Length: 299
Image (cartoon, rainbow, N blue to C red; front, top):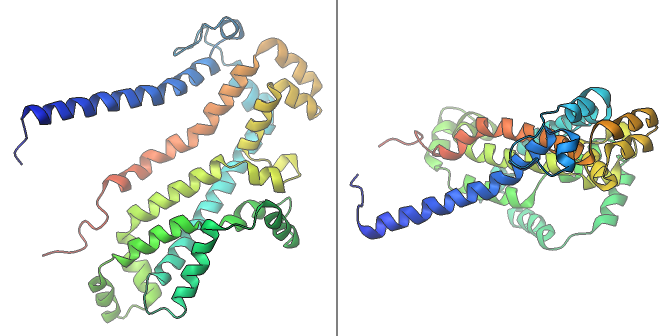
């Protein structure tokens, strides 16, 4: 490949790199500030010394929320379980439904597609959804956070579009070798579709991990709260001490008021809440940069 060394090309490359550097700075600045405040001591935070680097390194906020308070570790585990179960079920159901609807000879395919598209523009609203969940006996259960959201019409349509572009020659070859439709999907289509599957899986996981409103509507038991709902309570009450006092831990709340600040607790909880997505993303990133159909067709 011959590299374009004209002035216009070099100018465009310079502009692109400058813009990307600015985007990175704007993106990383709030994250670094949150991490710095979470590791700073209370006096430095009160004086505004913590900016991009911790001032007076202190682990009190993390020690408190991880070891002294049982609510946040438990809610962290709740969020992991909800996200893992919901993502796996969403990906399985979305893939199966999308593969079936990608076939033009499917009976009543037009009806099913219309049934899927309509909720994207017209929804029943929050109260009818709550009544449906209540009538199914899912109130105060993890099922209420997963079952009503098993399929996203948007990601379903994207998967249908992808399966439509899948080479028919590969599927026909698999069927000639004795595979049925399900065997073709599992043995041929999915191994060559991991980029798309991983992409929608990541977005499903992020959606479950960041969601707090369904838990706010359906859960009554504090021990079942996900991490985001606990974080919401901490931010709204402006202090973990207030939140602990409301849950009956008055003695621990008094100790916290003298050792940590509301900001350090909020930011430490934020850091903990973003760690799982930061850890998972590098393992999925390879599917974004790898060609979807590389190696599937030769010649």
